[in-house]
Amino acid sequence: TIETIAIIGAGLTGAMAAHALRAQGYAGRLHLIGDESRQAYDRTTLSKAVLMGEPPEPPAIMDTSWYASAHVDVQLGRRVSCLDVASRQIQFESGAPLAYDRLLLATGARARRVAISGCELEGIHTLRDRADSLALRQALQPGQSLVIVGGGLIGCEVATTARKASVNVTILEAGDELLLRVLGHQTGAWCRAELERLGVQVERNAQASCFEGEERVRAVVCADGRKVAADLVLVSIGADPADELARAAGIACARGVLVDATGASSCPRVFAAGDVAAWPLRGGGQRSLETYLNSQAQAEAAASAMLGKPVPALQVPTSWTEIAGHRIQMIGNAEGPGEIVLRGEAQTGQPLVLFRLFDGCVEAATAINAAKEFSVATRLVGARVPVSAGQLQDAGLNLRDLLKAKPQ
Ligand code: NAD
Image (cartoon, rainbow, N blue to C red):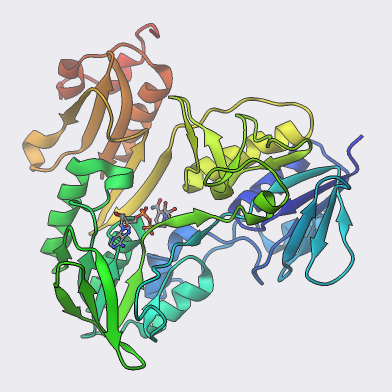
């Protein structure tokens, strides 16, 4: 029998897993342990609304009253120092160890840092948690110059927010286009043009090589000699899974805890979900998906598996972003084999949905300000029904009708 379940990491994944365990009827002891001092909140707001101060605090994932009513023992501001998987115990920096029957690792990821000269100077920020967002908000003053190192999701979202606050923004992106990891070349280039229209200066193939300044940062210098003056710097060059507890315990990891499609790790009774988990993908391979929606789905799957009712949930990456005033939603890998088909470009001059069509099926879709079309696109990706480029482009055809075809 399962008497005690411990969840390490009290963010979105930890809270959603606790919720799923109770919803699925688990009535035993449930410990939710986190090193932040707050109950789970919505991190997706930290680079957008909360960075503007509207609202000043990120919304909570679960009402504060829920944890007590569901008899979840929430231990905040507590760091786990070590897992003893042989004796099935969690050890803390201080205090008695905690024994478990099932353990979920939901420790998330950390902002990657640059180890270049000057990186210790004042005025250099990263953005991952509430405190980071509040500190950056305070530092953003109209008329100042913000240099953003890394033109990915955080970089482009913060650039948008900072322009709204009348801050001068330069993005230094090491790659040859913005947003390549998540959106691919075509949408990346479109976002760049939109950001430039807002007055954002974008420098591509720009690898930061050092920060200049006395105590405070004054400029960022690139490997090719380009130099940009800065009052303030944001380093947003990706995230690294916080998998060190698992690695130290001998659990198999490769950029995240390696799990199967139910969240089970290489170690009996230990599971992982969310950004810390390298989870198997529907199209093969496995990695940390780094998205809100996939973390939610993984929390549900891991909860079922911990209760002995495994439901394999191969993942398809799914997320959304808001850049230069546009809401962009994406499912699947934007780049890969096959052809890119645009739907809805003609009238408005901007693509509404970009499909990646491979082997006669929709493999991936990116929707720009097209929420309704995206929900159908999501179903097309899931259903794997045969479609043609002509059908996807046909404005007179209702995309929903394509779902009636038989799956391949
Ligand atoms: P990212 O991977 O989206 O982007 C990092 C960017 O930095 C890439 O474009 C990369 O080419 C560039 N880069 C890497 N090294 C560089 C260097 N030395 N100099 C210049 N550029 C460099 O990562 P992020 O934007 O830092 O976001 C961190 C995490 O937060 C990710 O897990 C991301 O998924 C998540 N996040 C998601 C959303 C969303 O889904 N809307 C929004 C914000 C953050």
